[in-house]
Length: 589
Image (cartoon, rainbow, N blue to C red; front, side, top):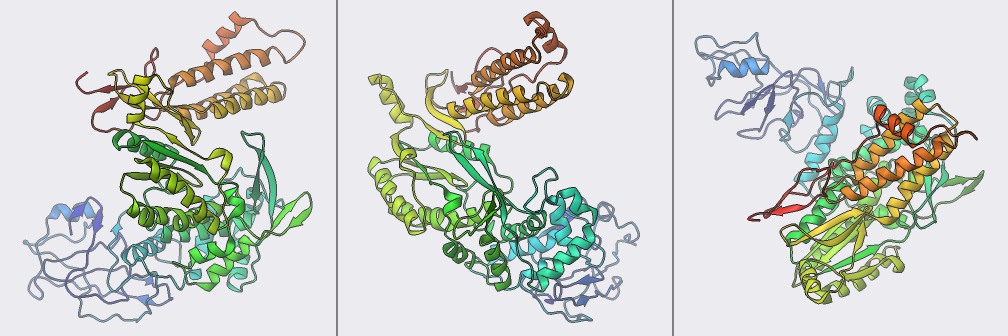
């Protein structure tokens, strides 16, 4: 074991340890002597089955059992001021392999295999609750370690993880300002009597009397003029969904492939964009398959989704609870609608279920079956139900397009024909177009338009800019918001809100090469503000010179690049410049 400040990484040595030893606290760090299997466990630790393992603390000096010299620096860094080396000999506190546990405990599937699960112990991720003696996140980490060690393992017992402390943790993870469900109970109202509400919820979960309520159906506009349906669950259903989400995420996250970026920890839209950028810039890409699944969240087949969940989960109680959420139904304008298929967008549980569904029917199929039959290069980047597939050969790209339609149709999904196409795109296509004077096609992904561009050194680079549809929607949204709020609040109040909206636009669309569109957005916002300030009454409020003084006194956020080109050999990103756009400089030029 190597000391790492106040943290320690433990690995069992020698023969297998007692199966009752399943966790270690930072307060009782692990001390392993060379050639021996010594371990110290925290007193009072309760195993998932309820039994308690009490470690024997032995203070043997060198005269009884031989120990290994440990530098005093380690003791100080670990915080053990009471136990210091005496004459080069270290006092040990350990449970030897031959010792028997005082109270035997049955090992469950969250404990991992025999001995310790090779994890890292450090500062607490969540506060230890009274009566548990173990961190809440440690239970989820043990699921992740077990799933990583055994890819084919199916978890039998998971419902016992839904404890009072775990539900309270999930409640605090929810966003406070979200809309209420059909019962009208808000976050603050539920928090007023939180302990009693959670105890009642936990009792109904254990007695299998819990029934999710129908979601409240609302609609939001789409860029094409259509409306996207959203389902808003009640606050109590959100708590249970958050708990299930954390359990499923701990199990399936180790199975998800690197091609998936949507709704995953430490991954996001900009990671997917960077991955696509590196693929096109460094791989022999000639064709891009741009596909869109039609109404994906409304078309998920419940039977196939449950079959995907059973690949890792064998707990019937948890599967029954997930099935109840899928069949909870929808309330719209006072009428109840049965939900035979689909997962309602807007719920906490929907993103992880969508990822699991597409992981089995799309990601694994592409990586393990399709790519093995190809001769040229092929790569995919997926964010939720939006994905881009790049190919080297035209024939393979068009064959894949036909196979993909058959594959998705088998699982109840359809391709939107008006949004799906196979286009020529890439470095070699751009070089040929430069000679013939042709124009290379473009494609949209995650709100950006990708096009072939030329760097200052004259070489090919992938251009990225705000998609026209998203740009118009953003400008229109600011316009409508200013028209509605100009007389509801004072200028000083809504000016700060406007600054937050503009800053949010920059933080998403502020990528290298897109500075011109950010400046255009800023200029249109300024013009909109000037217009609606003078529309608050019949009398004009200010002229342009007076308005410029307002901007100098309370300026709006200026356009700024937040996300730079991913680094790769041959090009380096350029820092933001107020006068020129973002370009890539090639080495040697």
